[in-house]
Length: 206
Image (cartoon, rainbow, N blue to C red; front, side):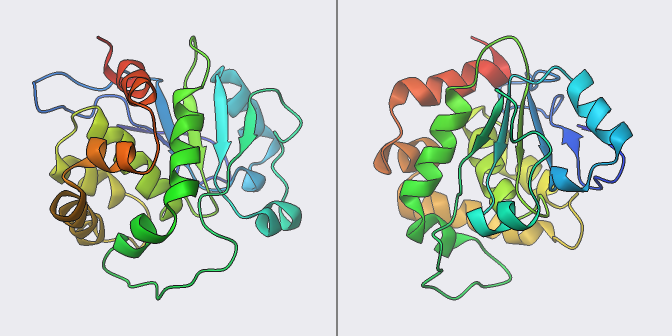
């Protein structure tokens, strides 16, 4: 994992190097996560463009995009895929994302499919507003599919400001206990097996 110098973004990192259960590691420059790109300075925008990304996936609500438009919204690589329903119908606890997994399955499936459909030959950047909650859940599912252990996924989540690792650890425990594992969850919510395999190949090869 490498923190990125994208001026004005304070929660940007390359997830390459995270270990997997079989002793491998995630590819560098395959999957990035960050907070909202609307914060970027001119130098920050240049740094993002220099990364030669294949896809930028913006998980924010439409109202957030209207208020703070992405500087990349006009680019061919940009995709806006809101990951939460417009009006939440559940309480948002501070120590787990279990309700997000239960109540936003169609949106989560669409976001994961967008990750799977990213062109080859460049990295994928996933972001929301703060780069913590929505980004944290989608990235956790991708990392789990790639074979990153739960404790490493939780530790990476904990690198985001004001986010203790226990919240993601609890989420992953809930996922396993109620859906079997990340792959079973994704299949259940409508993500094709081929898309799951595509994300795994992007992150670790094979």
